[in-house]
Length: 219
Ligand code: AP5
Image 1 (cartoon, helix red, strand yellow):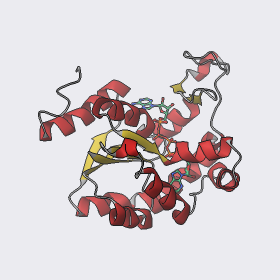
Image 2 (image 1 turned 120 degrees about the horizontal axis):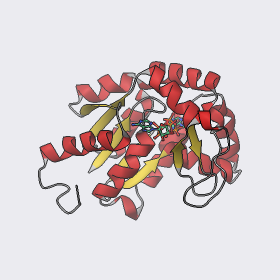
Image 3 (image 1 turned 60 degrees about the vertical axis):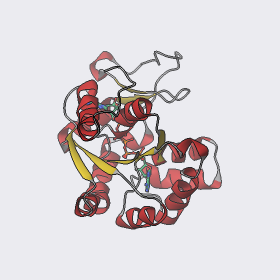
Image 4 (image 1 turned 45 degrees about the horizontal axis):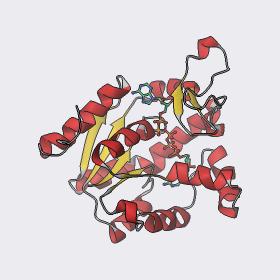
């Protein structure tokens, strides 16, 4: 299975991608995570990407397309992959379809008000990279339940940056919904509701089409 997860910033793509990838044994390819790894290693690409990401801008198409093209040639993608955060422009989508076929693009839909709230609550473990949604009324010190490291907010989750990311999404990424719909590849999922409820809606979508898919996993 070769999947794309679409949706605005904070829609829950990363959260759901981890569950989908585990259930169907797919390689989870997050361009955001790949860029953050470059930033952490202070590579030339990471230094350039950080300036753009912190402003809520997209990284240039040619850089991202090259990264994904190389990544999906790795052996762990032979059983299929899940693209999280790519493509994000029409140029990326058109290029992707020249070097890979795609079975389905799932768009997770969440209104802007919920996104702003989710971003305010998001904290990430700098050590093991787990993502949390915290209760901000309980103060500003939170610790990773896995490794005990103090959690941090993402630099691009500042309210003004989130607002700009939503504008960039509307302008550059939203047109991909029509792009994939026109090719008969699009499914829409309501991203409101508890994380596990949203996950179940996505699993139902795949398993209604192929009732044997997911047979070897617990429900
Ligand atoms: P990236 O990391 O991909 O950011 P994004 O697409 O904006 O998405 P997010 O990671 O912010 O959110 P998400 O949808 O994964 O939500 P999550 O599951 O974390 O990219 C970052 C930057 O890199 C971009 O801005 C750009 O600069 C650059 N970049 C990346 N890819 C690029 C590309 N292809 N081209 C060009 N530039 C690129 O959930 C969010 C929060 O909500 C969490 O706290 C989570 O716990 C919580 N949550 C999740 N689900 C629920 C739920 N159902 N109910 C309540 N809370 C929930």
